[in-house]
Image 1: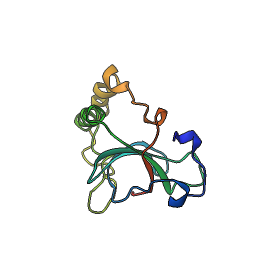
Image 2: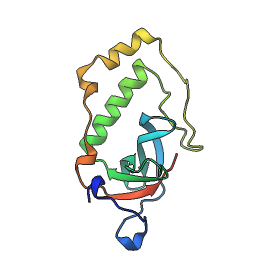
Image 3: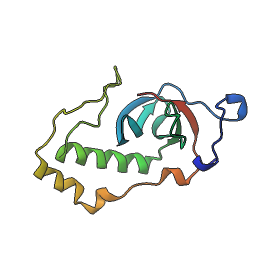
Length: 137
């Protein structure tokens, strides 16, 4: 099922697969709270995004990352940490965001934001999602 086909209510007996035990690693989009994130559970790494219903940020769609997708997201995040900082990271125990942690000087940020490799974004939403989850962060 594509994210655009998602309909409420959110019940497992309606065919939605609930994915549990997700640990947030870092967010990709943020506005008054995370909008999209990379997370992990015992089955691997995942991308998740808030459902398209603005009033309902407590339910998220989840896509399991392939090895290539995880490699790309990991490399991109490592470059972000090196040139911008760790302020998108989450503590795996408390799920709290690392606000202001290790923030680099602004001139250093250009090394990340001006690099064409890091302007790329994988469109996970274009494929069927693997399940839904309660917002873990």
